[in-house]
Length: 348
Image 1 (tube, rainbow, N blue to C red):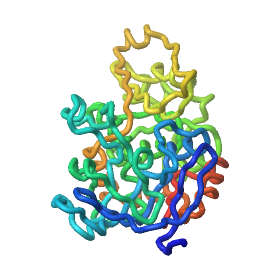
Image 2 (image 1 turned 180 degrees about the vertical axis):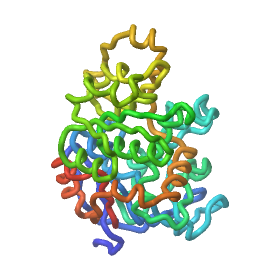
Image 3 (image 1 turned 120 degrees about the vertical axis):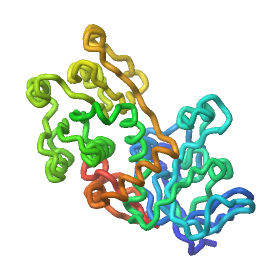
């Protein structure tokens, strides 16, 4: 017997993702919270999992973790949330007890678990939030924010984590290398933060054109940056170079574009087997550069993302290029493969 609850996007294996009915209504047990999904965005990790698989996923598993929804049931003992509250979530859940968790760096917890990997995700009509996530306040209030935008809170939180490493007073110019979803998200957040000189690098195509349409005046092809970075940064180099492109050659060369004393963010991960870089250590040494990496985010960063989204929703709306139904997951994958999409929102 099928149900009338709607469908889930269930991962079984690489290229084996099935649209299947949600067979029964989940129930919030002690300490848990049940959320009715309003919107779930597709993440780059979802795309990689679909194409290549992911060893962290325990199949069969409901995919998705970039969501917005309404709390419809509170388990016994839950007092920190209320029925009807609209929420997003910091979806990587630390143990709460280790060195990193006690420092507030739950994203670095060695025994962390994630929605859509260890627990059923948000590409479904409902999602059950585990007790340890509820206890650690991983649900973040979104007020009356549009659900499509609120679903961007989680991916944006990763960019907020990244940008938190650079003092605002040192940030007047930035170079964003790669305009995938997170590259464009970085660029928009930088603009919202008041950074005046933002230069983007991307191959010609949909995202190149889209950045121009969104008001980013200086968008360069990769073969142009070497000749123009000094001209575009007043002869100094950029305060911050953000690498959102998973390219070994780009990551090796990126420090040359930073000013002395500047920052270089290794936001994008490289694939296993091609992760070693060759770079000029004299550039790092004599220019006193700060190179850093960031991965994932914490509750604090999701709150910051929702705050910046709420202040100027219209500034972020162009990032949402498609709104589709959960049942159209495979069509969404085709749009992403063709390079036609930035953020795709799925609705139950």
